[in-house]
Image (cartoon, rainbow, N blue to C red; front, side, top):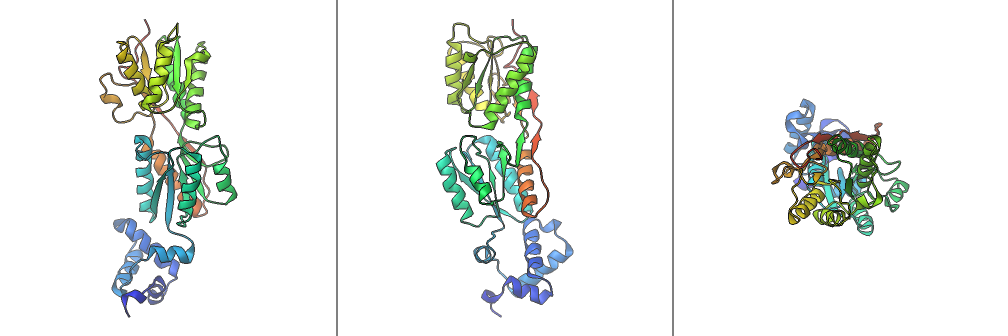
Length: 336
């Protein structure tokens, strides 16, 4: 028998088992040989002895499944999403699944195109990290009966693995209020992201509970990158009554805020308190270490992959919102 004629069915017939049994065994051995069962290893060795060579493309065309997940992210260069994707990929691989990632640049049109591209590869489901609140792309996915979960961001009625961003914003607001700050501002993310809205809402709620109201001019919905922080800080510090503390809902935005303070010869933590969000790796290594809200990036990615695996196997699953942690460093200090 030549190598080219050996199929999963050939191996199954030789072993006296169903084709699906062989398929699952080979996936488990490929994902984690040390964790495979003795039965899996026997089928794997039989397949090798028969000269079986996997053909993922043929399997996909035959079964309309690819044993793969598609992952949509705004930008894989984003440190937070990159960490989540690493966890997603690792978790999926251990279960015998591959992952394909696509960048959408947070553009709804690009998102639709990337969705169609991934579904065209017969992926078994999608993990969506670029959910937006201002379009119906996710509603369309649901109508098409595509199995998918969200990661990082949430959307009404859709399964998601996220951080409790309202709680994270609350921790930031409570921290600044306890330090005695009453002139407190926020540089928030886009209003079409759950992360930007929830962090801002939690922040405002915590300050309100401390008897501190934030005037409208102290709230700047700018974005999540350093340029957004720069724009927000320049506007806030140019006010007749500038804030003594600024919450940036992303560490990169906070870095932009710190840059403006430096340009104005203001000292973070002494002249203006600054707190960020996410606790990216460089936050503690800045010239003035950044106080921030730590999110469990890796665990969120693991949970998202586990949720999609559960869905594709018909198991019950529910959304998760993991808890953030306040990290206090030198960029926040008591108000004079």
